[in-house]
Length: 545
Image: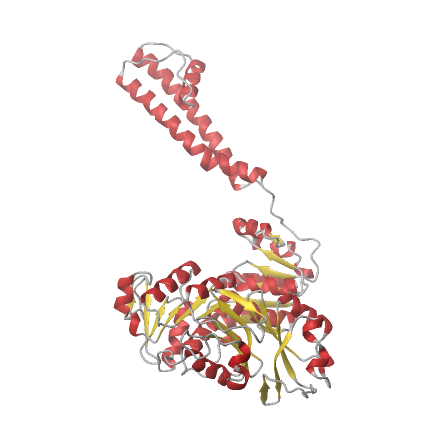
């Protein structure tokens, strides 16, 4: 089958041949009738070829009849035009396809792998977590440009269309699970195609519209998720104290443990203290597992780690304890709890945020570039005049739910310059951009990639955890080997690199363990470490059967 560029090149050659022959006949007739000079076909063809290629005119260089002069001028300009047309539009794409590495159309060696249809933010973190767990992944990507980028990054990729049997070529029958991450109609086709081909494994679908959940299940999906709406709920819960429970959506582990980010304002009594000197476990009931300083996440804090003024602590504890820490971190001038919330961006995530805040009784003003139902201020959030019309300086907080991470980053910088005291809560697409958004001054940033990746990984791997970039992950576990032992006996830090964050026993969540504490059967343990440390922990301490 001819490639698209090959078809275009063949069409170009045919068109050039027709142009040469037709122009040669016209020149031959024109010279005989208008100039009174006889020219043969091959002589005329040579003249046309020289003119269109801009290499010369042969023996003919003067014409007297205006029509012939116009004809020759048109040929000259047409030749110049063809040169600029042929190389960038036809020849270069042909050469690129001819010499670039061919995209794989099948994955014959794949066995027991996770098959992902279409790459995007919702599955970026999932792919990392699955690969870290030692499972093979294969991405089916119909977009050839995206497929090449993935190949360059080291992903196993199969490129092709559904109607050409790309799922079968990617080893569907030997796959452990299938994750559908295309548009909703595309996902339905993927699910139906997989089930009709006899695939009996898990099929997980990421959908954009909640009302498509039921049709996806009827099509054969094992589970259907709407991560954009979950992300919206997380942002709304972070913004308003009226939303109950006061947890950050996907940041809730188990029944009681909350992993949250709390900014330590420069005027807070905690600013500048060491972790030991702040006594956060005793005063607030939280464990500090990391700190954002100047936009960089620092993990494994020690007793001598200082709480940076303006830094953001990553903490674990109950919802009440996190709230107590937020009050301590705010200092004498806590965050404004009156006025409207401003919401920039009114897509799927923005609409969910607005709905939840209004249901909780909060006033919400929406800023969007396009007018529409529910939009209060039309304009660009990057424009100071729009900020003035929206009365940003008197708002309770700003929630950025725009689609572009670069726009979110720039908007955060502008907002912090225009109204330094305003709380900025940001939706982020790619997990690697969370650090940049924090560095710009956002109090809280949550990525679509992390939210969806954690949800899907919990289903595929049977592991419930929260990842904060590649540096820090909090995992919920119930290892059989812990029963009857003291934490010191286990030597977790020395053996695996993880630390115990909290222990859930019955109705109680413990973040500080007494020296004589002993694990009991049924205890839920939360450990923290980087991805490699978590994998070592899972290898040494398997779950209770």
